[in-house]
Image 1 (cartoon, rainbow, N blue to C red):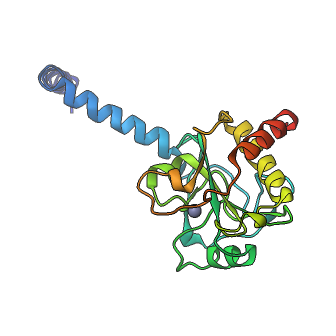
Image 2 (cartoon, rainbow, N blue to C red):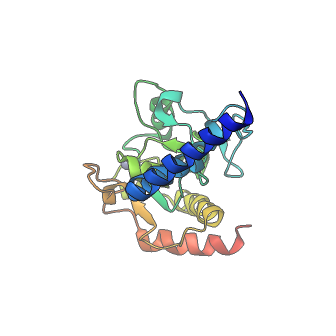
Length: 222
Ligand SMILES: [Zn+2]
């Protein structure tokens, strides 16, 4: 094809594009903005663009890795794709061992990032960059880290000092990593998640004590 043909073809296209921009500007900008947003969110899914990750790598120092079943969480790249600005506190309604067992069961359909045992031992089951199915609410799952605590909502004697202290250190670390304010707006109970029918951590969870411990632990978090 000669240069004359290319020239006329290019000129024709320019006119076409201008007409689209003038005629349907809002729609074109809307679609472009949406595409940009998708690209910003999911660039790491493009071939060759995936971020390096190490399976079993821990976010919380001193925790034990105990992988949840793959069906109980969604692969993501937080906080690059979803901002993390909430910590959700749960109580298992059962033992630490029960929590690990059900979160390792692909049929369960739910799991939290962490499980804290009565003696303060912490299991990490899902990486913080991934979305755990723990809050029963998609938006909340995408923006939060979920922590389960061994015990029952109606047995406050099971909420030991060791568990409160260890969980507070964990939450302080999460808040420091993502710049989450240490307050009751950002550190919430499962019961406070919109649309939930869950009541945990229940009326016996000592929020004043917990927040005080998180604030104390925040001073020494690096
Ligand atoms: Zn819960």
